[in-house]
Image (cartoon, rainbow, N blue to C red; front, side, top):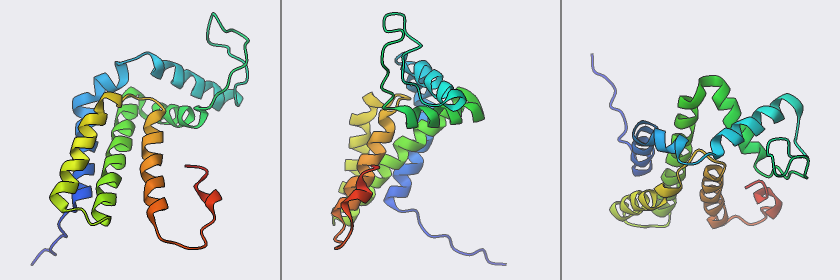
Length: 169
């Protein structure tokens, strides 16, 4: 019996798989422990899931009771949901997936613009290497992904698309 031939992976697939594996396995400790913000983000997310949005600071000593603007609330809820599912290892894997998807989309976007495949791959990997100093389990990973998605959407040549659909990104 002959097995069906599987399609070859695309360059964005290669970038995605490489980063999805490398980030949590090789960089997971630094991803979670490079700064102290992850604990606060998880705690705020936990509070929001249990009590709703936070409008006054209840976590700090110097700003206790002061107005609190939770502009990162959605990512904090997302991180907390992942944390509830599998603890810190799950947060590390989720961050790896966010990073991998971001740079895979960048590579795909370059290919769609007609960039030579080898150059697109090298650019995606170089961009990932340069951006790796910002790979922390923090809300800005969602911003990086949203930026890659937004650029891809804005580059489309579609007439009649309402600009307000880009607002969530």
